[in-house]
Image 1 (cartoon, rainbow, N blue to C red):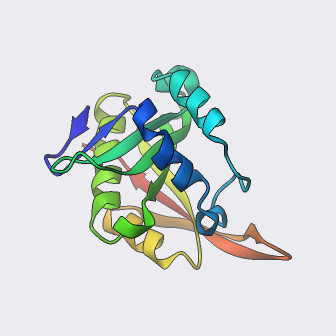
Image 2: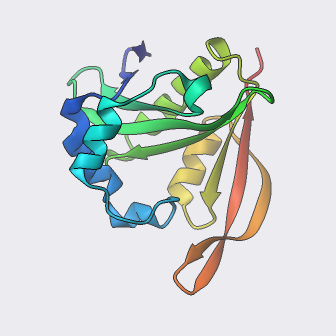
Image 3: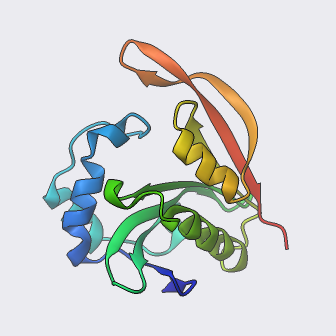
Length: 173
């Protein structure tokens, strides 16, 4: 496990399936997600039971964010599209809607950044955030990410499109 004393990050466990089910099926979050369809408990069960923690082989790593004091699962953070050659990876995060604004997200992103630099040797992390997602943009900026560009008409919103910002954080020592 990875911890800063307030939160810890760990691999998904079978006990997380209900929380994962809730987060993955939150339609409000779909507007920013790649997948916009309901996910079954069975699919999540298979994911958890077939989880591959080798991020360089799998190209991704999902960790559950746990409040260290209560032991409650409060969200999940992902490293994805990990590119070992260019030493970079994307980061995505979800925090339970009822627990947002408490600093869990930024703590988790900072822990993942430290892990990515120290354990995986990554040089940078990136994230794509919709223009209208002020809370996520603020969180990434608070965590040291800088806007690297604006991608026009990047996220489809029904019959229209929204711009997205490409954020980067260099993981220098």
